[in-house]
Image (tube, rainbow, N blue to C red; front, side):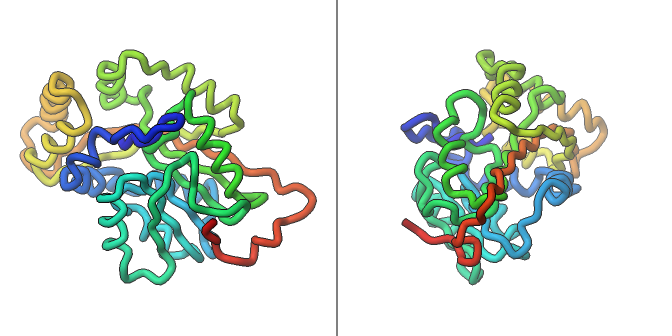
Length: 259
């Protein structure tokens, strides 16, 4: 799980910051059936609209939005990942990557239609500054969508809770409900080409003790298989629309502007 900002400081991500290549393998393994993207498409449209991806990491998801969006801005606080993301999207005319944080996005007021964050920053109580910032940069009628791992879905969620004893799912769910988000729970499949890939991914996601347990249980789930190992993983898709109001912002006809 990518984690990068809490309150006013930048908190280093324990995985993608230090194990970028292994995290690339993880991104490729996640949601091989495209369930998250299917649910996102049901919840909102980014076609012809301006999108910002908060905590974009090395830019893995940016090109998926760029296929139909008018413009895409990736925001990431860690300079090596910013540079890697910029190289990834170098040939795309409608994608830009900038250094920034969730609490201080490099955008003017009411300049984007979609704020997307996937397993980055928005983990529950403590992310209020980022929610306010998302509201600031959204145009009336725009949408903030948060994709995060679901600790209620085993076995992955059980491993997370064992590794994060202070994480309280009920309080997190209530926090987002009180903030006006709808919640859609999505079951996905992670698929690993081989055992080495599976082990590399799980070792960057969990403490050594939990990683050993996760690896053993994943092998049990895939007994007799050495390739295309499958792991069920649940997500929460949280969505909130910004009220339209009586007057649309005049910025609705222009691409996002930097401050």
